[in-house]
Length: 118
Length: 111
Image (cartoon, rainbow over all chains, first blue to last red; front, top):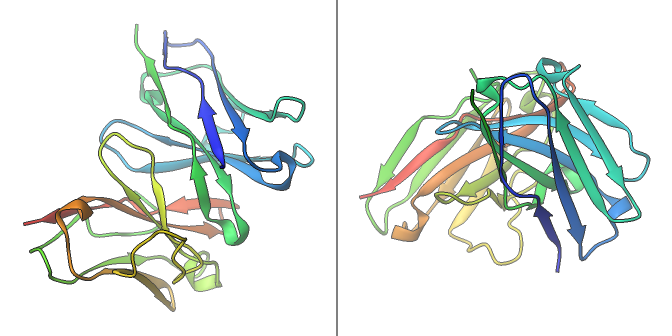
């Protein structure tokens, strides 16, 4: 069965960086893209960016460009999202999600809570 | 301010029918991009409920249905059950933003 398993929660200080991993199993990793989506406490879902596991092409949300880097390791079927220059408003649960045909997200990771506080 | 607009909340009694609207624009829903719907139970990851405007993934009850017209889409839930109490999100793609967009979410309360 398809599974996306994310790394554990993180506590960071403002200005630091965080790197979240998303290990995929149960399907051909390079056949699908991975989107990163975050959810601030009590708020809605926000798309952060996409990485193609096939060719490593990425596309990120304009507001995060310059601060976010997405990578994929096809040897371990793991996608990574690194966010730099963290601010308090980056506190959120970060999800990875597989991008299915037609652009839906058919499988999601369990979420990783990143807390940014001084 | 979300690109896709949803009502913040809807409610209904058990057994009733409710609908949740999702209004976009000519650069997303109106441009022909598909709309997808997700259900998020408290403290859990979103779950795909409807894909491609009106298609239910395997295992999703037929009480859930989706439709799309023009720049809007709707999710209908019939025969409301207590377990349907959750947050619901619509999602599409936006050509102006070159990225995926979500609605702000709608909290469904089963009275």
